[in-house]
Image 1: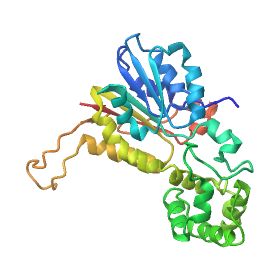
Image 2: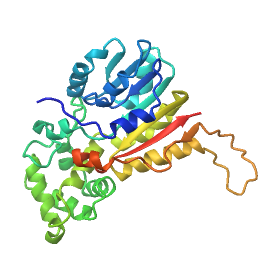
Image 3: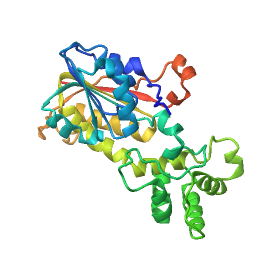
Image 4: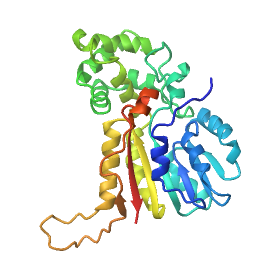
Length: 311
């Protein structure tokens, strides 16, 4: 199957990078290479783009797509949380722009054996990087009832989290839960019928929670933003596209803390903590897709773009 992923907020993101033709840019979530293609097209022969992704299918697809620019593009299979190490290995100190698109690609959702989707009966997998041993099946079958409740409540923001966790634990005592449709039935039974009739697919929030937990998505994001800002040249920008409120909250908070890192009590007349701002938030409100994009790509619906510029 071809690696397809419609890049969300494509032009808004690339415009906000303020690309310098001779600059160095990092796409930390390369995917099918949609954003990278636009960035590379605006670089001179002196410019450089580093694309990072942990998914081997994405690496293959992006390598093919970016062939016209292969003399200025370097592609690395890794997690963007190791981005500093990747730059060090390439002998690069600072860069002029970084982009993260935190959405699961359409390819990953639509490729049945990847186990991200609740629409097809397949093994519970959900690994972004298939070199990882742990899968969604392990979480469903080994996490305690409390831990299942916690991740479904916190990462899925599902008000029926407690009941869903209880149903999962009861069911797996009969036999291990192996497939997406087995899990769907359990979730369905845990949610009142009148809610199921109106609230979208009942499994959506639980699957999101399991995927975030398995791939440590929020931890990786939380622990990467400050390091990325530190590696930007003055005037360099980081653009991050999020797809749910938890990610957006982390980005908003980290950007704000880098703009105003002072930890002195509000009643202090002058700052004594010595923490200096690293730059400024460009997007007071996040940029969201235009109506045209929403019509063309329903998966862009919840996306938000936030931008920070290094001082």
